[in-house]
Image 1 (cartoon, rainbow, N blue to C red):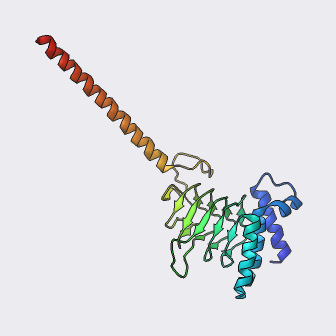
Image 2: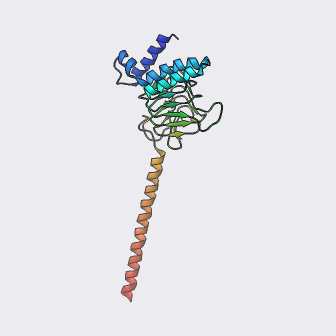
Length: 226
């Protein structure tokens, strides 16, 4: 694919994903996620030529300008959309498929000082919502979503939704847990567990109050009999 065709395709995906986008000139000049992707493609070319210092310099300049850090070694497919993007970190051995969406504050990172493949793989059409952390050499399956603020430490199957800390699969192959799949309305297993515990606490309080009342009545009866 020619460079200009690729650039237009990158801009087209912005129009598809962001209703605030108005003109190609605006998108080209003001969208930091787009600038980060374009800079990465240049840095990645130098990285593949083993010109690692130049690649890293380009990456750092892009980070300074956009607030998005993409290691030159990361492999990125077509039509990646980084929305807003501030605070996004993409590690060296990340592999990102086509039509992937990443929101601000996302980390695609490692879990230690291990060598080799140590960062996540995102398959086609994955969505990583605001503030999510995907850590280690794990795979996020095709058409899968990671909810905002989640911490994912193990593989996510295709066509799934994962939320929570640590991340848990709550939807798979269309079988979902009672809420819409918009990334800001995903099921929250932590909240659900807290609500369950609160219900149990309320039941225990009611039971203790009932026992105290029964004890009071018994004492009053004993006093009356005396």
